[in-house]
Image (cartoon, rainbow, N blue to C red; front, side, top):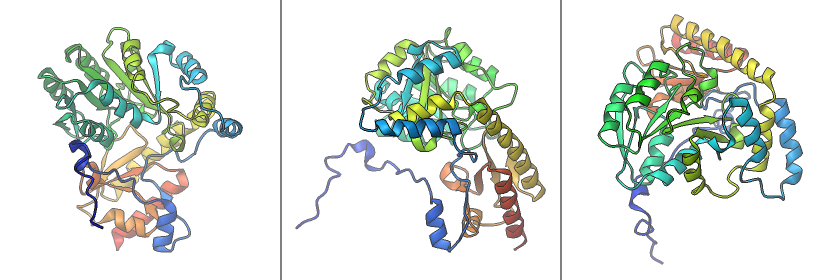
Length: 368
């Protein structure tokens, strides 16, 4: 029987679309290198795990697994709207922020429409855009930061949307209040400003903007947030958008029914009640980020100052193949090559014990 060829029936836009690779998991690394212990610091997960309140809520909801979830996310919507001070009809929920990015392109983009973003940037922005045939306009970062003026100038030439992640992934830098205001004041009113704050709860710089306060006067602003990072619910996949109700209504037209499962909804709603877990997560990250930054610099690595829950640092002037060498010693990090920064590593901030272990391993590698 001859081999079937399916490329002929696939959409042309996806034929050469890169396949996202999440990297190796802990169990695979243990098997491959015959290790008893592995520290996973590659995916920017909360090392404290989810709130105990969220875990308990999830357990209880499992008994209702035979029932379809509330597609409107009603209970979570009401609680979150009160918490952040927006109308319930200004909220949109997705199976992770990644799905919402997909739906933004599905709802608003035709083939060859322009999407403007930084370079490098969060991979979902360009992968989602490429999948619908959007034309991706890249604006190089300057000193690891978004060139907001460059992005705005590109948008003025015609764009359906600009995409800015702040704190930025993979550098951890922020776009400031002044830069957000510049974008809001200069991007055409019919161009969406997608402002991704997945790591926003970790940012402590006084120049980090309170983006929600701009929504009323700027209906083209769409803010992305997630329960995956500081709330520790990455495995349940739930993110949300905050925007003008008209934008939300348009997104609802392309949202799959029941896209956010009932366990995720229950866990997210409970997580909002656990202020202590949120405080502890911020504190552990703050102390760990400062510790890693200082220790990495002592060893001679070049560290990008971060406002997120990870640090990006250059290693190729000191050693080679650092991510592979760390992997062989039971430390999983993200090699910068796939992130647009060859010669760098992006490493999640872990628990104090994990951070100290990683520093010890790095010291040994440097001496080898």
